[in-house]
Image (cartoon, rainbow, N blue to C red):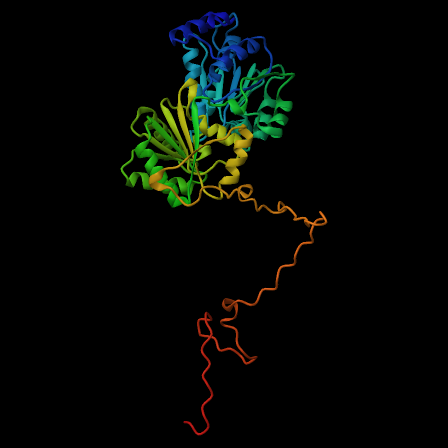
Amino acid sequence: MFSQFALHERLLKAVAELKFVEPTPVQVAAIPAALQGNDLRVIAQTGSGKTAAFVLPMLSRLLGDGGSQPRVCLRAMILLPTRELAQQTLKEVERFAQFTFLKAGLITGGEDFKQQAAMLRRVDILIGTPGRLIEHANAGNLLLDEVEVLVLDEADRMLDMGFAEDVERLAGLCNGEHQTLLFSATSGGAGLREMVSKVLKDPTHLQLNSVSQLNEGTRQQIITADHNYHKELLVDWLLANETYDKAIIFTNTRVQADRLYGKLVARDYKAFVLHGEKDQKDRKLAIDRLRQGAVKILVATDVAARGLDVDGLDLVINFDMPRSGDEYVHRIGRTGRAGGEGLAISLICHNDWNLMSSIERYLKQRFERRNIKEHKGLYQGPKNLKASGKAAGTKKKKTDAKTGKKAAAKKPAAKSPSKRNTINKPKSDAPVLVSKDGLAPLKRRKPAEPGAE
């Protein structure tokens, strides 16, 4: 029960109103530690309830004993990698703060800069993306010296998108006594460890899962394919035959996303495409239509779909294999959320196999192999050298039956030149006449008999 936490009574009222009953594991672990004022470094999978794990203690700290007092200045900031995730987080903050006087605002790219600057003077909690916030800081609009709580959500993704310097600068502009709560779905490697060392002070580390335990409710399969056209046939078959409420198809490039979207629309699928070249209006329209059920299929690149939270999204297809294990974790995190079931299928060509194998090793898992008999291709993965017994360096040397000593290897007999290699070879050193296209020798005419014309 949420009543076990020392949250402000106005927040407990909101939680009851929203019918939140049992806290998730990440909430049980993170909320008490955050309420004690500790800096936190939390690894928790997407869909585990981590937004409430940082929003509730943040709001409780801001309320203190004077939750009914009007705002004085900007006191909390939440940084996120994408506009879509920032918009979703704003809605969550507003839901939990519905019985308080705390006001939240959103700062992302694609909106009027002057209106955003005016809004900054009227909110207690700021939610935004690093790039746009840096622009306001450079313009002198963003004053963070009274910030008490800084939240970095999806920190690993912000690092991947090149926001490390922006995040560190914004953290440096905050009050030196502020609390920092950093959440990510993966460990993030050396780059994220460096960010943690720079922006967190003696943090409490909470790892709620290992990557090998992510998305237990999601089946993970691979289907081999010969080429991209073969992949398109497989996508068409899967969308026609799998049972799903909503599906998302990931590609690595905008060009491939647009091409696949065009193919689906031509086949009368209700689909939408989402990538970095889409403006804010189109991006919002795509997500709203998917949530409302007006479309069932979203074709997207990683950057565009980051932070996407849509109920009923139970099928993920990797048309292109992601380039890292962390990116794979984020993709399949779109399905099998909050204990639900889902299916993640990766389409593997010969140039995807090594990537797929490295991701299996990273996750310490082996994906289920699957074939679609209607579209079974020739490529079924690399040949197993061990099975053939002819791997390089594995031949057993023969021993002489009489001496027991290893027999000397026989030199291979000299091969006679094959007819195929000599068929076009001239029989003399005379020059060879070649056809105009340079592809084949011309037949040499016999010299004329003496006296012939």
